[in-house]
Length: 112
Length: 116
Image (cartoon, rainbow over the protein chains, first blue to last red):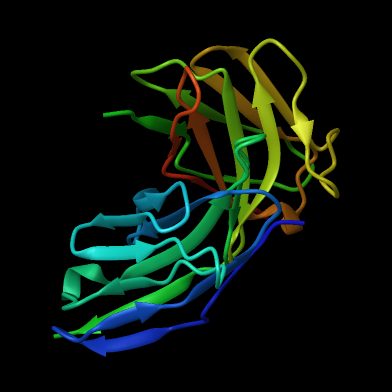
């Protein structure tokens, strides 16, 4: 079945550091890939998405590229801010049924 | 933008009682809604798919008689936890799939259920 594996946290970085959160997936067919963010005390928000191979999703300085050859969708940001502290979920959706499969989430702490 | 609300945001109930959680799409119609459960520091686990006007589809291992789902209108789905027990304590999150598809899922803020 479909699954998502992402690096376990917590990840602690200093402000302005470079961020990478690894995500790999297993899926039949051609899923859509997502990164969601959950800020403390808030609901899930879609951060970015990519719907086909080699697509790059980007938002708020974050980006991720759909790599079919390595079945990966790593999240990157060149310079993180304290306000980026949150839990980040990698996810995929099988377009046949719209169900979203989530990774376990990676908690990110950014120190000032 | 598309907004999904949940009510209540948190609830405490005693063992053996039932609790109803509402999920509403405020500014769009949603034929399909999803219910998830999130354990502390863990991922969201899909419980069921709620379809307006028809029976919900439950994921393997989810007791349909314990978690009753009703999707009575294009903007409202409800999850009722029946005969709640402490192990049902969790964070329940709904999402609504905007119509017409293909479209994005919009997530509610979640409901924290504590069963004492």
